[in-house]
Length: 356
Ligand SMILES: [Zn+2]
Image (cartoon, rainbow, N blue to C red):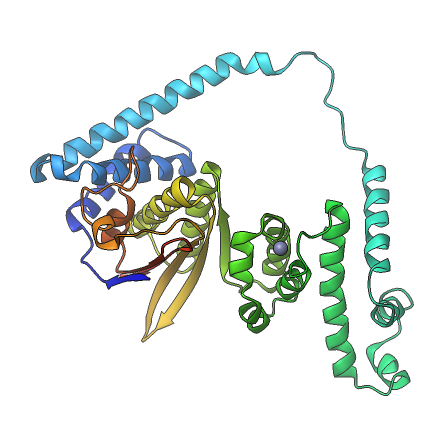
């Protein structure tokens, strides 16, 4: 296993360029999300060519990159507008989904999922949800306590969510381990998730990776304070990972340049994952330590691993061809950076930015 733990100073000269780039882009691009994208891409390209640019030409060079990106974006948009008519072949209105049919189908899925519950659990759930029997009455009739019945109902609902997804997907889980994994996710039971190594399983199991995104999304909506996780396996996921990271950082109070820096570092690591590891996952954790607020980004993949970490972190050593700053750039942008890699197993990058 290789591990590198170091906290290099951020590359201030490049970070200082960000406000200028932001102003240039803001004066020409209306959409805020597109603005962020262009500023981040400019920063990435600037860092990739850092060694070839003199200090005093950094700003004009950055502005030139941003303008080029804006120009090519405008061209792309014009082209897609010209081609828009090709996508619409007739004047007929779009077919509308039949709401009644969807409702019926959903009821069938729920019924099938309920039928899969163990009989005693199903009985309690139906007595409570359908007949309206309260928890105290259920407890009294079973020689139990209201607390125990409530906890049981909670577990049963979690199981029902898992079975609902399985019925809906019309596939059996590929391994015996899958159901307990999904159950632990559905319950939001962190300790159980650690015991089972759910994260490790999700990185290796396509089936559970897909199902879990639905389960976790439901939980986050309900509880609101889960760590935020984003699976990454395709180019479009790079954007999703970056946007989610920005969102979490903004909610934690990060602003302006800091947001750009964080999002850029996330982009770089995410691109590496898509390119080399094929599948990984980002977790965003807001830290509150010694009166400081930070965002911790954990990127974990199940890829081939990096044999020579020292070399991979050297400037100018690009882990992939093309634009971007890769690992060394991400390390410079963040306040803390730690990477652990095991050949044949995968790589975990943990990086933290503290609010100024
Ligand atoms: Zn599985």
